[in-house]
Length: 27
Image 1: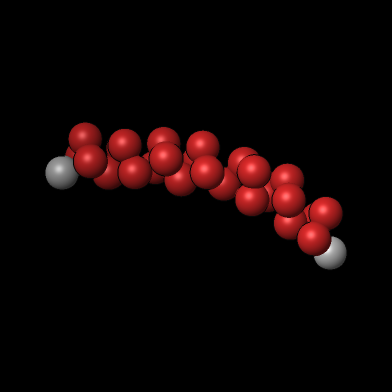
Image 2 (image 1 turned 180 degrees about the horizontal axis):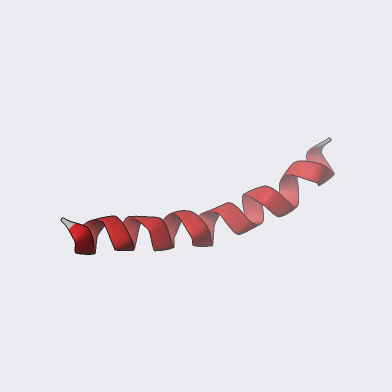
């Protein structure tokens, strides 16, 4: 369970970077 959770958090962090960078540009 913890391993899956850790992997999910890593994916969220990796995917959130482009989203955070694109959000101000979208505004």
